[in-house]
Length: 109
Image 1 (tube, rainbow, N blue to C red):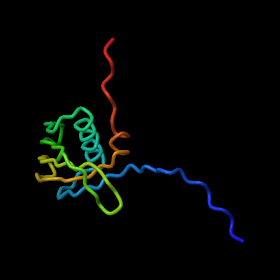
Image 2 (image 1 turned 180 degrees about the horizontal axis):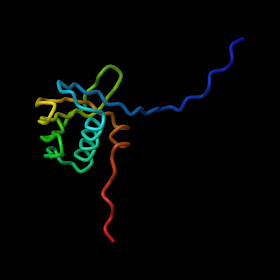
Image 3 (image 1 turned 90 degrees about the vertical axis):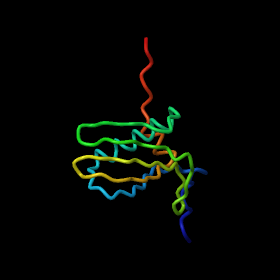
């Protein structure tokens, strides 16, 4: 007789990011783009300009929820330029990953 399966919560949320990028960005740059996307989403800013030490550009929330296989998330696009070259990145970020990447601004005393 088989052992009973463990109980699984009704809803399991996975934090995932799917990135289509023609540039050779390092992991830190990719993570910063996800954080910037979370900021744009939670602050309801459809466009954010950014200028970092080695990368700059414009990030846009595409205002659409997209599916990729079984994953559902917010679509973002960034036009970037830096040492790695310039190009357009498109990425899908799941709701759980947006929440995990979001650090709200500290409240002023």
